[in-house]
Image (tube, rainbow, N blue to C red; front, side, top):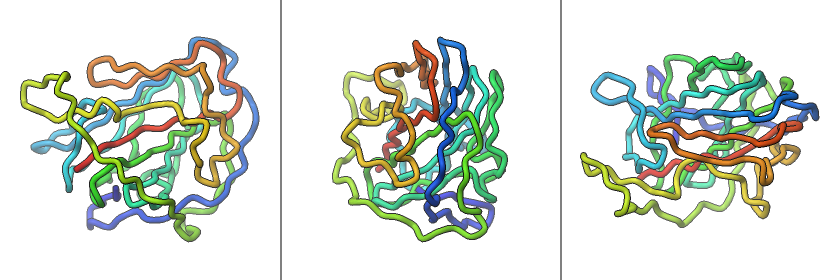
Length: 227
């Protein structure tokens, strides 16, 4: 996945190693995050099912809301295995401070992410921290990292019916980071949420909740399927 800007440039750099502050995100229980995937369709941004299998050239963005304050970081491992820092950075928005009960777009600018690359899954890591973290300036990005590309391909779930015949992959959308997963170097200090995070779909909204206070930075995945 690339970030398509007004001049169709793209985002292709990985975030540098960062120091993760170990402090409670909030002291309250019952924390909740809502994540919507939106696609630019016929001149309008429309919320779509998080499991929708996207097509080459589709332009997308995310809408994020939480019940707690913090700082949001988004990193992507593309279907070709390349790591990219998607947010924050100059092109997608430098202010990544989020306040409870307020909607935010990623990108936070007029830019949009454009679907490109081999068919498969983009793995987006959503990192929420209680304090801003130290990273390399987006003006001087470090060399991009690369992992082995996945060979898995999206599959339409015939049991999920859509009036327009949309292809929905039930395995796409938000999920826990597997304990055996090899995280990008900069996320190694983040807590994958353990068994405290639950994931639900409410219409076109992915809902991530925690039954206990989330101590320290928390990271989860969003699998974005595309042809």
